[in-house]
Image 1 (tube, helix red, strand yellow):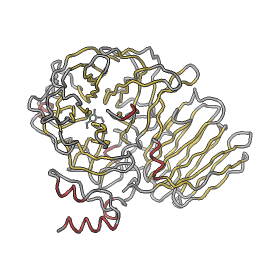
Image 2: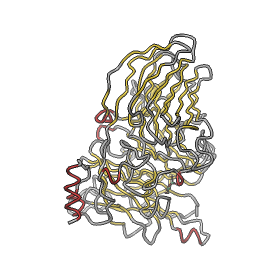
Image 3: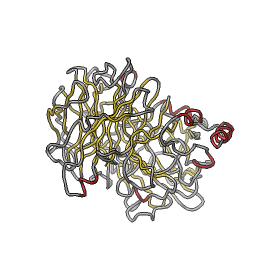
Length: 522
Ligand code: FRU
């Protein structure tokens, strides 16, 4: 009866989740997604993925199969702080609208279910598909907290589970763990698996404390160690986590490079956790890179543990990150749920002068929910700021093109809360100040430091500045995703004013300045 009423009410309110599926599906279903009840709490993002309730961290098992993009994620259904990890689950047809599904993986005798990936085993190499069905196979880390408490060091191992109904029902493989922790490495986790055409093998990359390790398998069940990378490369201010490895063509050339993504906690440039990347080569057994500098995929404080989709049509590389930071993730001021994902972003390699950079930029499909107001040109003289009112910047996109490198954007509300983005041409950096952006006192360091992003390779000439604001986050994309910063913020009322200041000496021209209201996906 309850479900019928929820369905009727849900239909009237254009609830997104399918009621029918929910009554038929075994397992725990998150609370029905009725908008007034669930999706209008303070700070609730309207177009970024959040769980209906409780704790979420890393995206897991990103895989496309039979018309559905799966998003599994680290989930604790018992509280809004981190706890015994499950894999929560949602699906999307377009990576814009999401439907919550029942929890996919529960802890078992081998431990909690930590981060990992999923593949479509098209040729049924694992033999886990029956009656001609293609299995989806999830490869994840088991974290045995009892072993950990007893002082062991081999408490993280790799296990698998499979589904033959496109991700609804999951069965753990009876031979788990498939990759034991023979060397007793304390941090031995977050396997990313993909099919490598060249060597006709499954490749698994995981992290082992301060480096990545590579394994191969013909069948996803037996794994052979091949090589390691990174003990003396990149940033090492904290433990390495959540690796990803994939090839990408350099735009405008046929050249292919391999990209290794490594999250690190702590040790990010603006404190706490962050994501670095290496560009190099992978020959089927070894990853090598001549990169000397440390590169960051996102300079903001809140894009962590991001990885990319397997099996996407036309080889697009689509990335989703967890929009939080371990420095304060457990303390952010939401009550019903905790944390959101970034918008899905397309990754590409682009040449800037002598440097090839990993660019990340929102998918075109985001336009489905953006309602552009109409573009205009604005000229702003030094010392004469432009004030641009708008009903709700906190659910919007703001974008423009400019040749200037000297300006400040200040979003504010009637509570005198403000978020300040400064482009400093002389200092060659972009600064994001959230110190007075809203609620900041839930943790002593939140908002204390200005978030800084050096822009040494930003080309001369016109660049695009694009901002996505959504209740409790801002994503800043400079020059089509060459430089990106993502940050959480907790304003207590929507920002309704944008002040644009010209801090240079020449007139500031903003071309194609456009505000788009973003519709809710829920
Ligand atoms: C990254 C991480 C992973 C781990 C998971 C546990 O945020 O620490 O290394 O698998 O979260 O929830």
